[in-house]
Each structure stands twice: as C-alpha cells, then as structure tokens.
Length: 345
Length: 295
Ligand SMILES: Cc1cc2nc3c(=O)[nH]c(=O)nc-3n(C[C@H](O)[C@H](O)[C@H](O)COP(=O)(O)OP(=O)(O)OC[C@H]3O[C@@H](n4cnc5c(N)ncnc54)[C@H](O)[C@@H]3O)c2cc1C
Ligand SMILES: Cc1cc2nc3c(=O)[nH]c(=O)nc-3n(C[C@H](O)[C@H](O)[C@H](O)COP(=O)(O)OP(=O)(O)OC[C@H]3O[C@@H](n4cnc5c(N)ncnc54)[C@H](O)[C@@H]3O)c2cc1C
Image 1 (cartoon, helix red, strand yellow):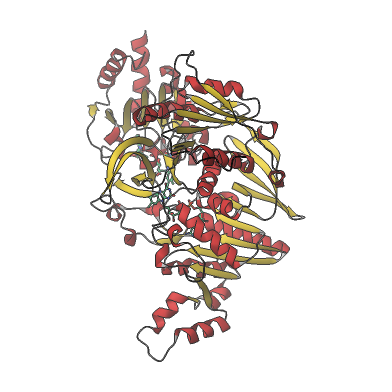
Image 2 (tube, protein in one colour):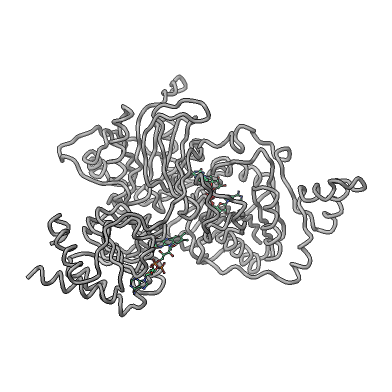
C-alpha cells in the first residue's frame, strides 16, 4: 500500500528525455545531457536520463558518459517504437512520482509531440524550442528567485529572442532545438546508477496503431562538418551553384544553403541551414550570396569563423561575419578555388 | 456523419515584420502588425470541411481571444463552418499554452460531443506547437500531430500520414482524436460569395454590446435574440458560461512568463574587409591556414 507515501519535496534534479529511434539515441539527447551536467552542477542536483524503449539498457548506460548520474530505464516490448500514449503516460507517472526540478526534451517531432502532453497533465510550464538555457538568480515582479532556469528562445517567426521563466511552478520544462548545445563524450569509465522502472501496458493505448513507417537515414551530416560552404539565392542558378560544390570539395567541406536556395531548387532541403533547417557550428562557415536573414542566422551564427561573400556591402550577413568579401560570387569563388589550390601545391 | 471541432487562432502577421513594428525596448508593437487567420488553422478548417463534404456532419470553429478575433470566425463562416464560438473574457488574457489549453478543453466539453478536433500544427506568433497536444491530454483523447494527409475515414477510425523525424508514418486511430495539420495538407478553399453576403453581418456578444452602447433604445438580450433568430449570432462563451477555475485561466494560470524580449537587430557591423582580389583572398587563406582552420 502506498497510500502513506509522502510526496517527495521538489528536488534539484535535471531530467533529460532520451529520444531513441530503433535503439539509437538522437544526438540532441546527448547534447542535452551535456548541458544538463553543467546546469546541475550550478544547482547542486543530479542529472537523470529517462530511457524508454525495448532492449535499450545499453543505451541507458551510454547516457552516463554524457553526464547522466542516474538512468531511469523503462524497457518493454510495447515501448519499442515511439507512440504518444504509452510514452506520455509513462513519463507523466514518473514526473508525478519523483518531482524533478527541470525536464528537457529535444525540439524534434517526437519531443514536440510528447512534452506538451506531459506538461499538460502535470500542469508544468513548458517553453518551446529553446536555443539557450542558463541558471540564474533573478528578481521578477519585485520577488527574488534563486536558481531559476532562463529559457531563451526565438519567437514571432524568429524576429525576437525571448527569455522565458517559470518562476512559481515547481517543475520547469523545455524543448530545446537540435544542434545548439555542444556534445562531448566524457571518459568511457564514467558510471552511474541504473534504475529499472516497471511498465504496465494499458489496452487503451491500442486505439492507435502504426501501420507503416518510412525513415530515410540522413546521409548528410552537416552538423559534424568542420567546414561548410553555403550558397544562397544570390547564386542565381543551379548551374552557378556548382561553384559552391567545387569550393566545398577543394576545402574538404560540406555544401549547404539558405531556404531561398532550397526553394529555388539549387540544393535539397536536407542541406538547409537555419530555423527550419539544420543548426550548425562548424570551424568555418562560408556564406555566399546569402543576405543573412534572421532565420538563416539562427542556424549558423555560432560558427567559429564566418566568411561572407556578397555584392551588397550592407547585407546583414556581414554583421555576424569575421571576414567580409564584397564582390560577385561568380568572380570571387573561382579566385578562391584557384588561390587555395596553388597554396596546397 | 462526423462532427468536427476546429481550433482557430488570430495571429499578428509575423511573416511580414518591418522595421517600425519593433519598438525601442525590443518589444513588438502588435497594433502595427495586421491580425490574420493563422494559415495552418485555415488548413485545419479545410480538412474538416472536406470530411463534412464527403461523409456529412458538422464543422464547428472555436477561438479563444480578444473580441476582435470574431474577424476570423466570420471567415470560418465564409468558408463553410456551420457554427462558430468566440471564447473571450478579460480573465483569459495573458494565457500561455497551458492556460489556453485548459480554457479550450473546458469549452469543448461544454460545446458537446465530437469525432474530430483539428488544429494547426503551430501558430506563427508563439510558435510553440503545444496547444493541440495539451488540449488532447486534458480531454484524455489520442492525437496525431504533424498530419500531412488524411488517407481514409471509416468504421469509426481515421488513417493519416504524418511527418516523423527523417520520414513519415501511417497511423490508424479510433475516434475521437485530435489532429494537428501542417500547411501542405490542403489548400484552403476561398470564401463563398453567397456566404459572405449572409454572414458578414454575424456578430459576437461583445460586438452587440458595442452596438448597444450609447443607444438607450436597444437592449443586449433583445438584440442577441434577434441575431440568433437570423443565425447571425456568434456564440460567445465567457468565464461565467464555463465553470472554470480562475487560478487556471489567463495570467494566473500560466506558469511560463516572458521575462525579457530582445529584438534581433540586423546590421552589417564589425568585420574584417577582405579585397575580392587574388592577393586579398590569398592573405585570408594564409591567415586561416595559420589558425588551423584550413589546410
Ligand atoms: C518562419 C520562417 C522560417 C525560415 N527558415 C529559414 C531557414 O531555416 N533557413 C533560411 O536560410 N531561411 C529561412 N527563412 C527565409 C529567410 O527569411 C530568408 O528569406 C532566406 O534566408 C533568404 O535566403 P538568401 O539569403 O539566400 O536570399 P536573399 O535574401 O534573396 O539574398 C540573396 C543575397 O545574395 C546577394 N547577391 C546577389 N547576387 C550576388 C552575386 N552575384 N554574388 C554575391 N552575392 C550576391 C544579395 O546581395 C543578397 O544579399 C525562413 C523564413 C520564415 C518566415
Ligand atoms: C514571445 C513569446 C514567447 C512565448 N513562449 C511561450 C512558451 O515557450 N511556452 C508557452 O506555454 N507559452 C508561450 N507563449 C504564450 C503563447 O504564445 C500563447 O499561449 C499563445 O496564445 C498560444 O501559443 P502558440 O501561439 O504558441 O500556439 P501553438 O501551440 O503553436 O498553436 C497550435 C494550434 O493550437 C490552436 N490554438 C492555439 N491558440 C489558440 C487559441 N487561443 N484559440 C483557439 N485555438 C488555438 C490553433 O489551432 C494553433 O494552430 C509565448 C508568448 C510570446 C509572446
């Protein structure tokens, strides 16, 4: 009988929902674990990974290397694939039982399907699509708050950056955009506690069935590329865009583009950088014929070094660039390629 | 026969933000932005109307918002909605997604039974995509988010194609269910001229109250009755009509707070100029090689 069970006081724990597809964790989950490790250090709490799936014990153990102190493992054949109802019910029960202080999800389709249900049932605040998280002491409406989570996110189609807080609620939840937090594995010897949680299937879950599933492995891995050459609408044609491929090739980098370049058919959508594309932070990002709209910048401004090539000296892209070349891409690119090849000789 | 409820929202037109909309303090001057019908919600309405066209039934559109949100409800009528509801009260103002879904779910319970609830995936101002799933959870019904196509509706189930990370899946679900749709799911139909003529005079409670203001010959009740008898009354639900918990509505019921807002200023600020010549580019490449960024 657990009628006597006292509700645990709110902890300082930071939870990360570890999203997996066919047993493989999404990068964003590891990114979030790394970030949570830092947040939990400031707060004096522990990092817990929540791993839901089937035959995912190894994955649960892998989360220790990225910063989890404890893994909550819910392993059952009925949980093999992500389904809204069993996953949300499982997480809702866990949150109610353990009262974490922070719960983080990737702002993926799965994260955005799951997190709102969990927040709704537990009446928690949920901030969408964050690009940064910080812990700070703040005063708000003349009250002082200690160690609050500052949840930083773009809104209004990317035209503003808002800092959202959840001041008076015990649980702060957020979804976080993929690729914005750094990911680095720690020593492989780092260990944690594995806690298995029993799962009880519910026949109501069966009202929803997955009939088919098609997923293409994304062969393009822009996020891991150290050098990216990115072309925009300023290239004018697919033919001209070949110069972007050529420069990327000689530099040993990947090709990317703006949405206008994708819409014009110069490159496929999987190579789009920005708010509705991929977020990248390479060593070098070369933006060619890209004006630097806010939605594009959102996906690349964390790059280590940025070179912009543009005919318009007032293009906003120059505002976040380290090096600016004012000139026609059709002349600058062949020069760049030629000069670089000569240096290698 | 299927009964659908469509969640619609009026939003500032964030796709066309220009300089004078952003204020000195970084906040958005909403009054300078035209208010529009959130496009994905129009798509949601279109899907509901298609289901009605094929199988019969009804389509009810609801919005929670300030009185001027009646504008989009009239547009719903022009497109073919059978009934529309404005859910409006000062006490609902300042709601985050949790408080919004609370009020919407209670209004839906009041409105009656349904087979489908349709919503847009996301509204273009808050951009959260949370209200749909939060409402489904509160109603204890399943959801299919990111729907790209309705494949079939039969024997009390719906089969839909939805987007997933890196692909798509086909889901079958028993009704009732909440679906959120993306913009390519359907092309919203244009307004029917005849319906525009009929419904452009439709008015909500607040709009009728405005008419009565300063005219002692009119009474709100009588006027509401008259609009109702001509099927021109936009049903209006306020705090008093819904048995709501005040602390779960509006600002009070919203755990998330906007602490700070900064506008994103675009300028062509500080950077090192590189001449577009071979010499200029050569120097840049040397520098990048020295820094181990290239080579
Ligand atoms: C909700 C929303 C989400 C969005 N998401 C994204 C996103 O994820 N990614 C994204 O990129 N955009 C996104 N956009 C679109 C974004 O607002 C811009 O429209 C887009 O980034 C513009 O692409 P561009 O810079 O290639 O084209 P343009 O803005 O047309 O710029 C072309 C540039 O090329 C320069 N140019 C022209 N000729 C030459 C030449 N011969 N040589 C060199 N330079 C030349 C011009 O001076 C200009 O600066 C989004 C928009 C919205 C509303
Ligand atoms: C800068 C800024 C940032 C914000 N960030 C957050 C945040 O992180 N978390 C949070 O909880 N709130 C946030 N809010 C508040 C949030 O925008 C409002 O609660 C808003 O009314 C609903 O959220 P949304 O626009 O994101 O809708 P979404 O959840 O994106 O809307 C999805 C769908 O739900 C339906 N829907 C939404 N609202 C209504 C309505 N009022 N009536 C009928 N149907 C509706 C529509 O079908 C819509 O397409 C923020 C607000 C601002 C101004």
